[in-house]
Image (cartoon, rainbow over all chains, first blue to last red; front, side, top):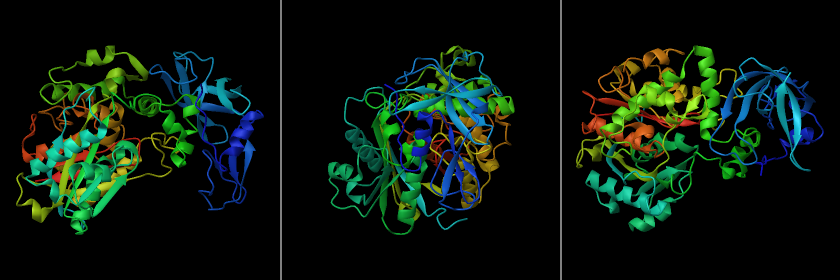
Length: 129
Length: 388
């Protein structure tokens, strides 16, 4: 069974977004700063007033790994996992689907897709542009 | 020199055997190590008035105190962030004895990390803990990034890309550790050195990390006795003075996944290093050796850079030609490290630092007047400089 994310009131908007096919990035309503991972206080202007924008869903591989051992609950090995610089300027970790372990490389362009785990959880996954 | 420098000393070290299945409880392992360390110091368990350990340790200070029959404790504390706590337990103890809050503080860490709770596996508990660490892990574990090796591999791949480092460069750390373990009778890999070819031929765990880039999983315990420099003069062993003891956390810090700052890496170890040099008044050039935390080889290279032994991206050259092996320019992990001796969350490395300062290591470095020891990497961490 897949590992489920811990969710609190600071991060719920993100997971509500994946359920409707949106990759949401926290934005500060006071200064406009974008932030991932999200948090309650703006790191730029200290404001607590925040919203989100929907990412266009494309990004570039900053780094990556190929996980071969040991088993990961809910996953078939090997898994390609990347650290992705989104075009909006934030970075996040994501599983990369449909890219072979010997094809993935830093600089590769990816686009987001979504995998429904069950009625409560949808995970972002990334595919080659 | 800071107010803490030289005020406290490690005067006793103790450990259980290092194995893959201890056959006894984690609490018993810790109690055995504490007793051994106190005996080494020439003290009695009744002299202990403080205990400190990791938040991850399953044996509370009061449980250890009960088994030791201690009537009272005046000081007890715990440090967070996995192996990053190791040297900070000694910092806690040093601050306690330097201020007179306690007289004799024992730092301990004991676990059945191979036979019971293996850290190398995906930890559902880590992903579901009800605190901000659990919330932070929501951005990695559900995506499949869920082992320590995987989190380090992400940093290692980027380091290779930026600086042209290779898997062989990482392998030189493993070769040095295993060479040192080979002559250490207490090491799990005693008598079992490896070559760079062995490293390259070992199976991939998480690309770019091979099996031999990853430390062991071990059962065992280590304890360290800390008291004031003044009291240390009258005890059984030559004291290892704590001339610097620092913790460090960097900007936008996470536990193993500080991926969101522009320059990823381990700047938290830079925080520790600058503070160690400030407190001690010493420099990297004055270190004849070091014990650098080695749960995974790439972070040993990155530590050399953060601590000021070489510039950014220069560690692959620094470790070439046996420089980090006994007889080289900066021998590292002369006990065999966590790849070779055992993985006791960095505490066995501090014990080796004490042996070097005493002059009793099985791989003794000439004139080891000062020894640098670091704690876990990729996490908020800590470090020590120990001196004669």
